[in-house]
Image (tube, rainbow, N blue to C red):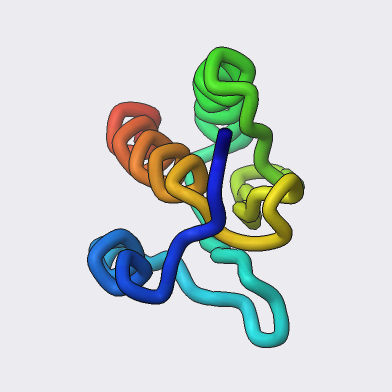
Length: 102
């Protein structure tokens, strides 16, 4: 079962994500990042790659896409806040973004 990040583990798990551009959302236990690609094809291709991992891990992002920009919010609804799954998916998104850049 997935658990909400404890206060003790939050710093260790979240600090590397903050360093890569993720931000905590005010008033919500969730993180957000905006990814900007060279064009729509690269943005959509990246979203498709992320969707495969999200489905595999049964953990799906809140996101929207306008042309080459993808806004992502991650939180675990089952625990009403951040969990290790959010950090895992954020790291995967960052890694895939590097390979999706034009």
